[in-house]
Length: 226
Image (cartoon, rainbow, N blue to C red; front, side, top):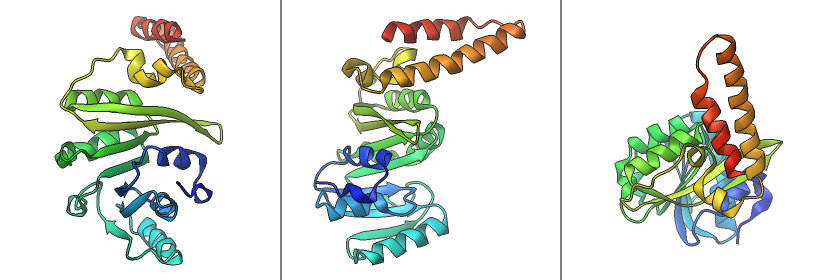
């Protein structure tokens, strides 16, 4: 069970990817709402909430004290996953960051490839870069979905290290293999967003006399998915 009253729609969506009984590391935690909600619902056994900035740590500390969870949720003022290994998390959430930043954080923490750790990732931008990185590094995407909050589209990716290197088409990197296979409810909306972005890019390149063949090919590929 998850105490969703504390969570925004996108966080509530992300919470479903955290395994029951997990010890969670919530990176970039801000208010620590995710670990608090998961613990209050009896979904996890404990957590560490981290952030690179002091302000979010102080807000998280206030909320943890509010719910008397000082002995269940630890705080770590650190950059990315630096220092988190000592807590031996089973599940790691990295939400609300750009795909390139998530890649940087994971690249600096090769220990996430051991012990059956699950990654719950929510790239705000460049999901295709994140998926390509996960595949290249041997992480397998075991689940994914699409959430909408305040008219914004969010992709959620759950991955675990297996050593396998999955092959993706460019459209699958953008939209997600599992989303495509399941015909996720918001897949059309996500695809149309990317088509609109690519179409504007085609127009800009064409006006400048540059080739837009790659963009047009990707547009056609996305349309085939739909």
